[in-house]
Length: 591
Image (cartoon, rainbow, N blue to C red; front, side):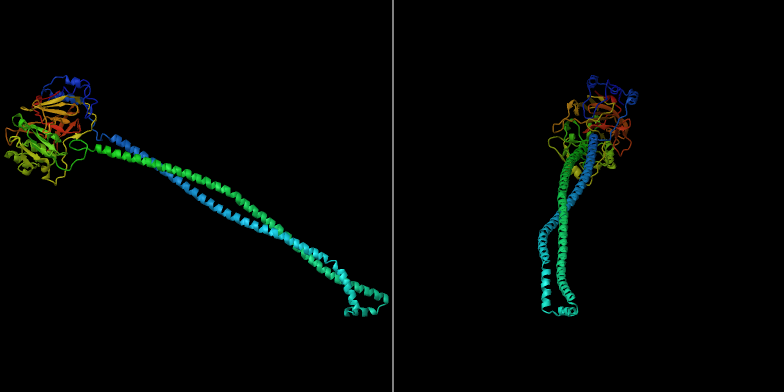
């Protein structure tokens, strides 16, 4: 077991570091320390002291943009509340506009009624004016008639006297009867009687005539009074009609003023409504932009399970390919596209890679080499992954066949493999990842990922210390990783390790998983990595070293990396795992 006392007690180390960022200013001090060989004897005590000093790691479940997303949601809620307020105000204003329009309609109707009343009053005035023009003429005609009747008063006396005398002379029977009666009287009396009779006859006739004239005069008087009453009534009616007209005319401007005022209020209200609608439109644009930004930020929060990089997972199983790492096999093809690469010890202190692909397909991968009994033990935890290898001895094949692995090896999917003429066998077997996946198109399940990822800039645990690199001596092969500010550049046996495309191997994370090794039951010369159990893990991420623990109690699940019982979050990107021999911790040195 390695001695961890050195990295856990650096001057000013650890605090404030972030995933995906370079080390703080303590990097120089850490660089100045010499390479140290790890003493097995001091490991237990040092680890206990170190872990006792570690602060609990806060593993955030939230994404890096959740705060901003929450703020945008709050902004949207506020904007929607503002829209609700504006909508309520618009509803109130529209009700006011409706009421004002009703008032205008009532005003218009009232004006129409007034105009009808005014027209009716003016018709009455015209009628009375006509009547008042006619009545004086009638009165004047009546006056002429009255004068004529008064003139008739002078005529009756003279006429009646003549008529009486004439009757007497003509021996009128009536008069003769009177005269015969009067013959018996004395002369004086008779004379007196005749005079009296004549007088009375004249008087009676005159009285009758006068009675008729006075009767006419009385009728004329009654007619005159009636005409004057008609004039008075007509004038009164005209005054009433004029008053009605003037009152109606006077009321119209007030109603028109109220209508104009209401129309002005409606125009102002409609302007407010238009302003409110414009504000709602602006707010809706803001909300749409906020929702677009939320979608963008949420898409950034969506990361692939196997790398933590932005994007959505592809529904397919993990594809594990056994890749040669002998000097004749380098540079390899496709290794930089692998999500996770395990490096395990094989015979004679050499190593081979198990490159696991899930998020990407490099197209071509190789050289593909034979399997070992370490492989089914390690890969069983990834839920029936596809396993590509060139072949194996009988014991290893039996172990693979007995495991849950789905073999897509050379013997199972020959059409997916070919040999390159540019290299000598056995370092020239290549495979197509697309063809290998195509052998099981029904598999759309996502294999469980071995690591959890944070986001760029997420704070590291307080126990993280700046590290420039780590060297793992497997025996005849030495792997070295040096932090370059964005990844851990790999060198193999002192030479920079490139892939076939000339790209330097530089994963975002390097995990040194101190693993017990035993002897393979298929070949006593072959070491077998015992990856079920627990042990120490050195996690190199974001320019720092974090001492953690790997745990895999269940062979059907991948190992977890924890610190103080909490999952450790790695930097987004690809991860290489060195299955270093736990019995030789001194062969692993960090700097």
